[in-house]
Each structure stands twice: as C-alpha cells, then as structure tokens.
Image (cartoon, rainbow, N blue to C red; front, side, top):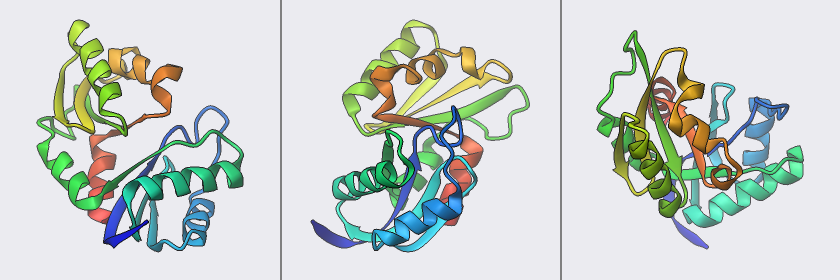
Length: 178
C-alpha cells in the first residue's frame, strides 16, 4: 500500500550480537533492493534511515521478510517516521552524556507490550518515562545496564519480536542522519 513519501527510521533488533552479523553495506544493499530511496545506515547496531512511499506497517513487513531471506535470521524491526523519532528524542528527560548513568529509549511496535514493560519497570523501581504509545525512556547506572529490569525483560522471547532499545546518543545520531 502506497502513501505519501516519508523519511523513516528503521531500527533492527539484535544484529551484530549473539552471532547474528549484518554488515551495514549489506543492509544498505537489501534496503535499496526493496526500492527504498536515500538509504543511509548508521553505526553497526542496525540503524537505517530511508525514504519510502510505503505505509509503515507494509514497510516493516517488507524489511523483515527481506532480512530473513538475505541473512537467515528471525528479523524484527521498528519503523517510525523520522519526524516522530525526533519528537521522541526531544522528549527524553535524561542527559545523553551523564557520567553516572546511561539513558536509553526502548521502542515497541506493540503498545500493549510496552505497557507490560513499563509495568515491570515500575514494579521494580526502574527510572523511566513513557514517551508515547511506541517508546519509553529509562536509565541505568553505568556498568549495570544488563542488570536493569527493562534490559532483562526485553531480552525475553515474549518481547523480542516487538521491541528494540537504543541509547540516547545513538538516537541523536539517527535523528541527525534523517
């Protein structure tokens, strides 16, 4: 289904960790092969900015299928218009350069899943702020990210297909690339 031409961020889940390697040049080629325009990849953690006239849900399904076919892994992505990514980044109340803590944003393609994660975080006393239906900002003390409630939860199979997390510095780089 075609819509208006929009600049999108595509955030891949779980690449270049746990044995799943996707070179950004290869990712760019796959995205260009889908007919996406002005494709730009950022960092090695699976971030792309593209221009497309596809509706977000169609773009998401197309990218996931192409990644599964090309790279042979269970691919999941979050697709958001760049204008929304910029709004979410601006809404994060934490500093990107705090020497004591890391600031993160967890994105979800399923608001119900994000509701569950926010509830888990709240029950554990996790520092967090809901940014909207698709994102929650949170912090973790440096060196303790993997021990944080939201980090542990998003690693569970229940949440893998609908979430991905970016640190705030990376999110700013994605916005700048848009």
